[in-house]
Image 1: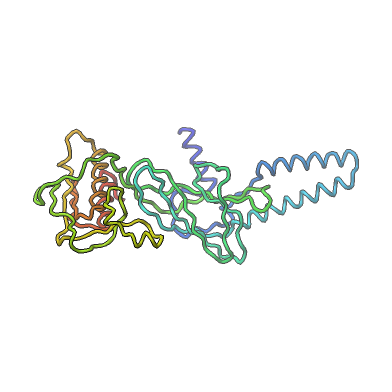
Image 2: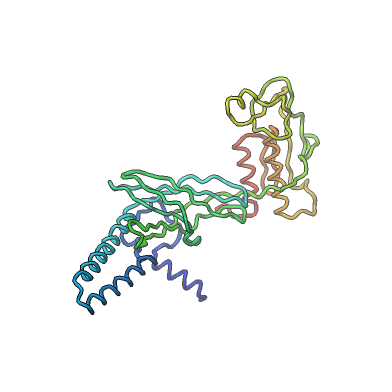
Amino acid sequence: MSFTRLRTAFQRWLFRVKGPEVAPITLGQRRIFVLPTAFGLALGATLAVMLLASINYTLSLGYALSFLIGGVAWVSIHHAFRNLVDLSIEPGRVEPVFCGAPLHFGIVLDNPEGRTRTGLQLRPTHAGRPVGEELFDLPATGRARQDVAIATTVRGWLQLPRLTLETHHPLGLIRAWSLFQPDMRGLVYPTPESHAPALPHGTDDHPGGSTRGHGTDDFAGLRHHQPADSPRHVAWKAVARGGPWRTKTFDGGQRGSIWLDWQALPAGLDTEARLSRLTSWIIDAERSGLDYGLRIPGTQLQCAHGTAHRHACLSALALYGRPHG
């Protein structure tokens, strides 16, 4: 067995985290670990020197100061431990992202006790201890949601890794921490092609076919403003009120439709390039207000539009060739 496997097995035994855990996860006494920080070790060494000097020179004041500071440091161990014990962790919301963007996992922490938990840090265990990371507090008998950002490098499902919740409260002498892994995952869409060709055109009976697009007769709604949009179609009243830039869309009586077909793509594209191009076309078709359908090996989604259809199409691309479990 390799050293890495031995270390992983030892950590699982020591920290009692064997994989994704069913919520809620309660941090009991046996799941919290306490060790001195570098500052705490330095203080301990200083106290040892002070005590030896007091013994050597029979300094009563030195004895009193050494034991007073030592007692305060000892009490801080108890306070650091109490800052984490009995906290409850549950998985929150996670929104899909495109590959390359960080995936934000929402973690809900619940404090059942009538005291505030102060100076907490939540981070992925493998990320180390970043300097200057923002601290947060948990109110007494309250809940708080914290986001954990995980880098994405491949499409498909991404399992939330092991997390570390730690505190240096109250004096920074002691580090108390606990490890856990909520059973939650997020979906990573393929990366859109940066300079994809324009949407294909043809007839509805063939892959890539489209019918009549937007008209200019009846107002159909607002969409996000694009630099190429005509100034005549900008919703200037909304902009004047301080709102975001929006562009008016008009319906000439018939919504456009288009088929995005895996087989219609150039033969020289590999699997990931095909997925990236189809992803880009789905974004463009949704932005243009077209009905669009998707054909990939083993999956066909009929023409539609809207947020739910966009998610269904992008999910099919994200999970293509990946296990669905």
